[in-house]
Length: 343
Image (cartoon, rainbow, N blue to C red; front, side, top):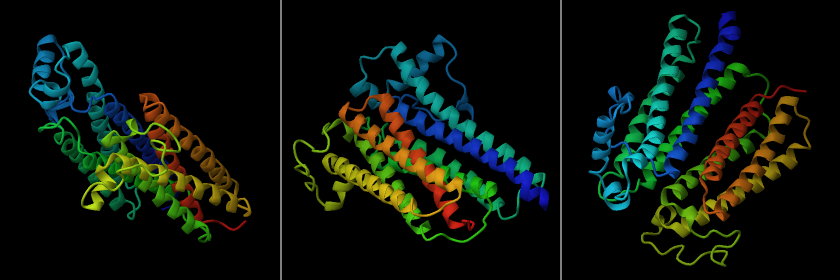
């Protein structure tokens, strides 16, 4: 039993953190794929056999001809040649290949650890849930791509946000399990724990709102801050019927909501940091809280810069990654506050 609770747990935690790192890279690569318009370049989905890319001129010609049958080429990229097609193909191919790679680096060690008796019984169902969610994420990714292969070469913002949101859920679940193993539950719940959990939920909602901004390309509109077209509240913010559609389909509303949520998160994080300064925390938690504020400041700066500069790829991807870093830090703080040891 001691081996499970010490050395084995540490090994499994490190493995889970490696998987988290791979998911983080997957989110970043997914952002690059979307921003470079590469997501609809692979029009055939072969989950097992599709791991190999085109190797010769003939195979590239076939892949390009398949792409030409779909709306993105016919309506948007009809001027594209084979060399240009290869550029967008490789981003999407790398994204899908990494997804398969994550499945392998998760499944094989999981089976090894379980059969070696290194996994506590309480952890086994969690690992299985992670694996199932990963499989569903792959299916959801293809379901998302299919939305852009019909009539309009535009991926549904609903499916894009669902795909992104599930990636964040898997990442967060895996990260929480890892720090549970590294820092076993000890001590009592701190009175700031509820505050930190609420922040985690609000950050997650803000990330989802960013998914709708990305899906609608709403960041390319209203490239001023803090006003939108010279107004605090832009015209047409409730122009759609029924009203709920404005939250997910109306560009002015979607960008406005993301601005409001991001500002609210910034203010709440600042308040949390001020309150936390009045409490004597263990060094690990205090470092986490200080890093939390720093990441928040960087993230809000990245968000405003991305907007003002009309969504350059590097800034936009860094902003997306920054959101996941912020979410990671708040999860760590929440975990620690739920089981804080007395000082």
